[in-house]
Image (cartoon, rainbow, N blue to C red; front, top):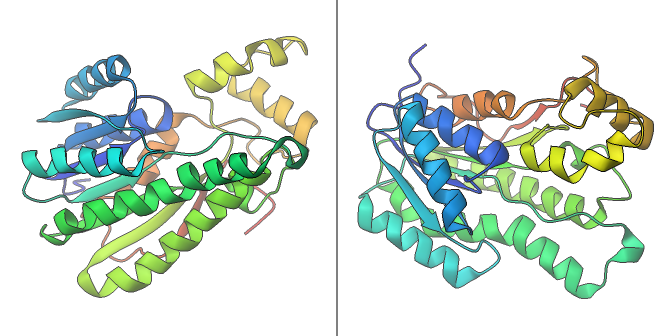
Length: 267
């Protein structure tokens, strides 16, 4: 299926690793030129090489601190210098976790700054470029925890819930301009950072943090949040859905919150 990315340009925030990198690789494989934004220049350059190898005609590696408004504006200014227009913005950045008792006011501000305001600022900076394109799409990554609550993710979930709401509202305001806006809610996804962070935790239960079935067994035991197909997801499974929603081929899906979670007990 031709998704219509030939000659297209895309920005993926958080594109140096995990789901962001998988999405950037997928967009590049479909023929889009891709700009990735993240903090670490070394990780950006490594990711950029992978995206080139996937088939992207052009790749920009732009160092941006998504917690800093000026850095976001500066990053998109570099995109404007390189490209006259932008077809796709995919925003994948999110805050850290913590229980209610663990978080003070600064932690809550930080969660909303990174989990919500980074997307607001990115869309604001990208809109002139998106409006200058023949077709344009915005996709944000929220989380299935906005519907399936966990006490360990209280500020994270609140910020991601706000992001989902902003995304839905943008679909209303931008629909008349032909800019389609959607939100993807990943379930438990086995990324390299997930595997590394939880390696010892799962190993204590005799489980492998890189094995999607072991990961879901741990999630079920720890949180009581199983999924219907019995395993955690992979970054490329988020990428495939996101790539379609970000494509020219998608001509009628907007304002959707799409769960990609292996099946769950909520709508």
